[in-house]
Length: 173
Image (cartoon, rainbow, N blue to C red; front, side, top):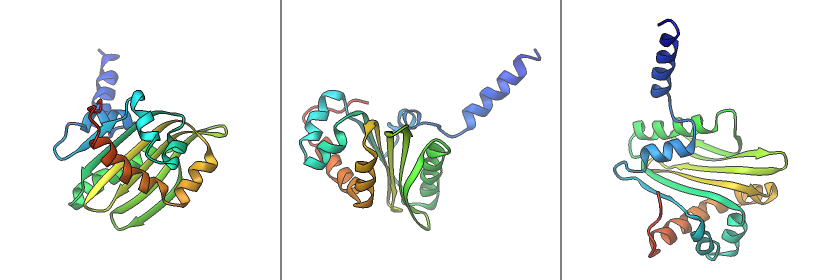
């Protein structure tokens, strides 16, 4: 019984804690009301690459691409999304760009391994909508830094959403 009590406590604590990965968060909230969510399957990367040369350069070696958009019209919704962004990035991501304006946020964070960026998380919250754009793969740090500096991730997500919603093939979970 003494061995079971700490296990039960950890289980309760884990169930009450925030999500610690984009994958967990995506699975938990993809069916929420007023949420737009898609995960790009491997065969569709060729379609996304053809949108523009910039898209081709960032999509080049992508293994996973997910996008979620949430309503964020209230302070409570905005704070929830901002807290989720902070919990995802925590100590394992490096912020390469951040702009805070009250509850509004623009954040680009990366996770690297040696001299390659392995994950990119782009978060935007304008107090109307909040969105997460997530890439996993092998990316050139110079290219990622350039895209962040030139606000190309913003234009990427703006062109990606209509492209994904207008395809004849339904996106996978």
